[in-house]
Image 1 (tube, rainbow, N blue to C red):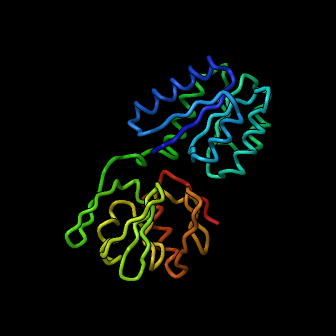
Image 2 (cartoon, helix red, strand yellow):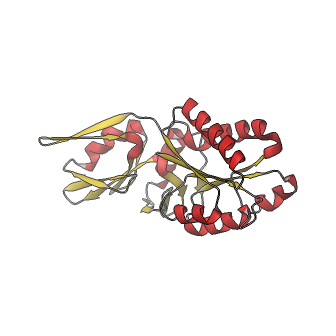
Image 3 (cartoon, rainbow, N blue to C red):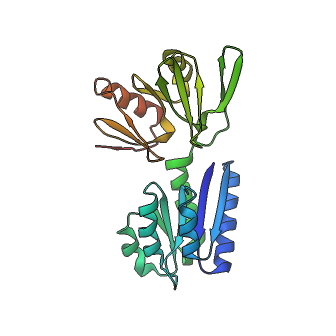
Length: 244
């Protein structure tokens, strides 16, 4: 589920912008939840309970401005992408110093919104929220999962642990090699002898580990690193992970 939060102390602007985001996501057939806030403290409290993949922040607010909110948000979840909203174009460079995904000028809302959302969609959403499923048959039990909800599969002795995006996990007694064959055409990569990872959740790849979008770190096979990077590149040419 793609979760978006919008924070703006102007209720009229909040309603207009929430409607625009809702229309865009529905047109793209993206399963989503929208959260609208007019108070920055309520937003930050909610951000501690919910992971918002994308947040729109109004810059000019009296109690706590958007720049301050962004700094607080980065302490809660560094994986959240921020797009600033403002009438004041003179604040663009100050906003950019916080490394947001982008900046939308309220004076050019229609042009900036479409451009920014299309850019975000192509970078983070395209193909990630499809509803295709896969079944695993283990003895007399059949389990079905949406492909996009499987984060990774971990080998656990005689069982394999299927870890989902909601943090739940399910055990199947199917060899990891068999699961790899079943899932390699669906965007899964064997990053280590004990791990099979859904490429959708890759945030960055270093010499020894893979950082996931949910903050989890998984080990990376040093011996197979080159092959893993080639596989990832072939599967996801539209995305640009940080490789250090």
